[in-house]
Amino acid sequence: MEVKIDTTITWVIKNFSSLQSESLYSDNFVAGGCKWRLWAFPKGNKRANHFSLYLNVRDKESLPIGWRRHAKFSLTVVNKYSEKLSRLRETHHWFEHKAPDWGFPEMISLTELNAKEGFLVKGDLTVVAEIEVLEVVGKLDVSEESSSVMETIDVNGFYVLPSQVDSVKRLFEIHLDLASKFRPKNPHLKTAYMNFLLSLTETLCQSTQELSNEDLSDAGASLAYLKKAGFKLDWLEKKLDEIKEKKKKEEACLARLQEINEQLTPLKQKCLDLEAQIDKEKEELLAARAPL
Image (cartoon, helix red, strand yellow):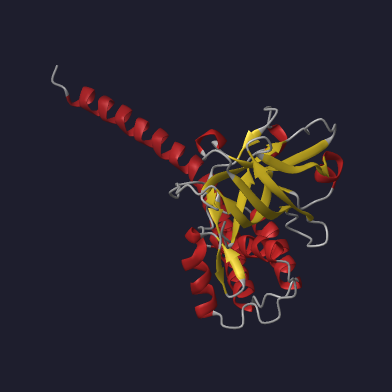
């Protein structure tokens, strides 16, 4: 019997609204000497109009006879726009051969999930699980696996994926007061805000040719949303203004080019007509000079 530390993982369910499968699993992650995964029912498990979510021990048959895992865990359906709207549920359970999964058949109603903005962002649903394995009976060494379910890393109080660590560190190195007035305290919501900021910075690194005016309008709304949460983003606002100005110049250049092309088209045709007339006159000239 032994004590284990907490494990935090994030699972992004892509295209949630269009899923046809009755249930689906996250990738595996390791805690307490065994493999775990999240088990989701997009249309509910014996609960109509609900999203059901469970924590499940994977490959239970491979564990030693009499294995047990006492785990305290929380599952959160993240609302990226509002900390208060995020749905958090907590429980604890002795996982064993006869009861390898435990969770919440009524995690959140589909009506609420689809009606309130922030749960489904571009069709994707984000779930965060925090698991603390309190006691382990029947130890089995299990190596870590490559997985799309990632443990998060703390960078200045923001839990981000390993692939995002360098980008977030650079933000804080360049802009020391970036989050000095950031208000939300919920770690899942903080992660959602940081992902939102990273996405916005990536968008604004695109060329004006790749960005539409609608994109820039959305970027402005996103920037206002992030500033309202307390991020200090004067530098990003300045960059957005510069991009908008460049976009105006691009559109002005395109308009002038179109106007010039419209003026040039009839002139080109006139040149072609004159060249044809010259060829005709040359033929008549040759015929006039030909000896009898």
